[in-house]
Length: 69
Image (cartoon, rainbow, N blue to C red; front, top):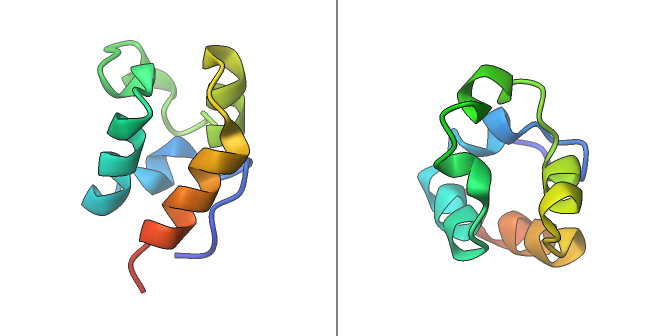
């Protein structure tokens, strides 16, 4: 998987269990939202952070650190 940026789709991130743990730590509401399942292919992590007031740079940095090689 290539490095995560603000444009990375949430669906790509959700394929890795260790990255889901990071999203849970930041209380990303999309993980529990039944409506997000319909849009998950188009949701960019940067836009989700913007919508919910999550510090995107901090989250992305942590996701990239946890990303499996």
